[in-house]
Image (tube, helix red, strand yellow):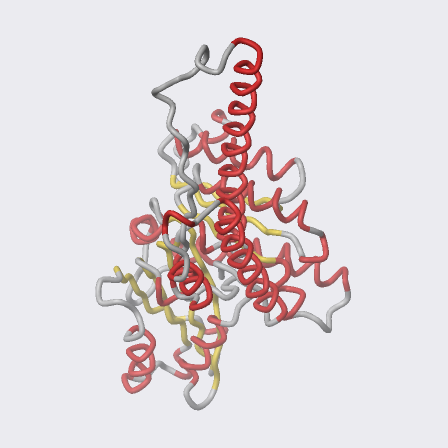
Length: 344
């Protein structure tokens, strides 16, 4: 891999399907090699359909988490989103769309760098947005006729690459607008761009460009690349990480209970004071609240009605179970309404 990249390469795209063996295992290794060589490294991966089952989904999300540690930016394409958007496609064509989405994302980023514009964007602009950008989203949309710029923006924001991620929470954004000389972009239409950008935080870092593309005729094309999202924004990732935290806590508690049982057994045979460890303290029962928990009136009520000293393991497990159940219900409802995501 180093030999292939050691030729002055400045940027590398690594595409893979997460959830299987090859992509999930090999992609993070290749990504680490590239990033260690100080090459701008972008991962573009797909995660499974819901019907492929929890085991494959969890394996895919494990791969996404590992991949995110070794790339500058990671675009995640949720296949479930493709199923909803292209429901009238044949199965073969739908799977083809998943592959197309990968290539379109890479191609769109490459075009930003290689095509010269009236207001030009270059590799350094792309690098500024993608370098250590975390989870990224990328999309392209088209518009024609009245309010065509708004149409193009909305088309981009409903791309399978965007999923349900809120682009307006991004920390860095790069966009370009393309049009033909047959139907030039008017200053009045820039008001629609202003309306779009006014929804971002005041500290968002922005790069933008204007391109002439005669093939568009009366259409405008809007391409956007945004970064700065966390790994928890990946569909299902927050739920999985919460489950993992709870599972790890339970394992610790089980180990402590087993050690206590062994202490008591030794005491039965050798005397209870023989193995007494005065320095050993009982571990407190712990529950880590997520941001969603803090907005959940039912969970807050359960906490308020139970004094701290009475929050036994059983009480905390009850709170945890309710939190997970509501997260899973939200995740499933979101998936039924178009999937959850962080991509373009």
